[in-house]
Length: 354
Ligand SMILES: [Zn+2]
Ligand SMILES: [Zn+2]
Image (cartoon, rainbow, N blue to C red; front, side, top):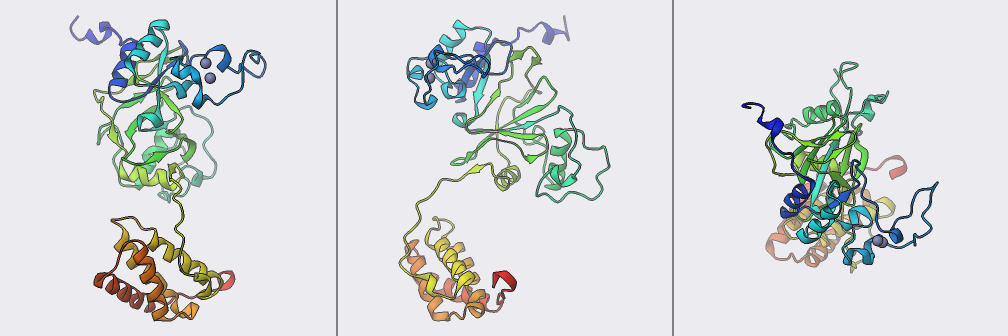
């Protein structure tokens, strides 16, 4: 059966898919056979539905549920694991269970491009909020999420993921696509629906995606082409995801500042001074010199508006720089040149901002 081999090749069984994913560090959890929602948990962990609440359910925090220690797949994505023994146990019990991949624990950011028709937003600006679109979009040329992604790729002069760089791309039964990306080291992302653009959702953090090889009543999730590796989130896309609120930034404790910037200038100027000094004091290694330079420049531009003295500004900048671990001749030079350059571009405040 030359040429027809792919038709007779055995489809990967869910357990093989789950073990293959786990071996690469992706945390998986079982989905109800034929569906795309997680398998029902034990009686104590399943609230039931609004119409049919489960009387045995006891309200509790799924993140600290003892069922996970006991190896039960309760609370869906919260049960996800890379442990091959546990995975084998789950899928031996329910061989037809589909495979869910927990995005956050797997370090994945998955771009979910929908393709389910529906009415296009009448306001074109809502296609990609915050992105300046080309003026010549033909009416009717944007039908679904694929077109919206193509627009974004065009505006950013980027390359469509899935082509270059290659990354695992999954076609969904409704004709949509899941582009899988690795979150850059040290970054944390949150899921959102439609924040990036119309029919562009993001699976990250506490959400999950259906793994390729899973067959539901609506059809199969299949990996496109031969690419089975996951590329790192492209920089241009990471920027857009950050801009649209998908990036989770850890709350850093605020540095206690040794000076009283409120005495410098008034109102808006004082607030601006405080935020510049804070930026310098809290700057991370690698960005400290650049931050000092920029802040010295910005404070220089405020001199005229705030009636601030050059020496006074140099003093507080030096304090802030010392806080960040900077001192010495280079630091002095950065402060002096930044303040002078800024002073040549005085900022003026008008109206309510004055
Ligand atoms: Zn349970
Ligand atoms: Zn529980």
